[in-house]
Amino acid sequence: MKKKKIMTIAVVILIAVLLIKACKKDMWETNEALLKQEVLNIGESVESVNLSDVTPFEWDLVYSFDPYTSKDAIYKTVGYKWDRISETVSEGMNQLVFMKDEKVVCYVYGYPQNNGYGIYFSDGSTDDSSPASIRSSQEDVTFQVDRRDGYIYLMKN
Image (tube, rainbow, N blue to C red):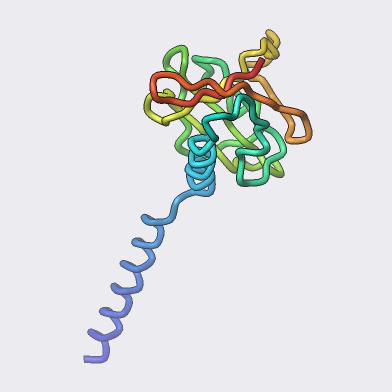
């Protein structure tokens, strides 16, 4: 009887641990949801916004990757590997990686039509040797707010 009780407790603990792991979101997913909420709540009369004002989490650097950048190139650029990264498969997709203390704290991936918003570093700052535009949280990273087709686009000049 005692053995059966111990086995039952062990199974319950195992199931609880698995459920907690399954329900726990990664920090970068949680922060992406918070970023999305902030961007979608930008007031109708707002014409420009600083990236720091719509990021409700701490970050040091943000990387905006060019279309078709491979996973290996992204890992090499940020100096860090993490799971569930995807490669952009066409123009117009977002691939943003926010870092804090050399760790990913927010990952934005996909089409604005799927995300509800888009953030574009289209100022030509990517040089030929890097697959990404890189900005520091200390910089003035101001975007023009463009609303069209039911989506919000933050466009860097």
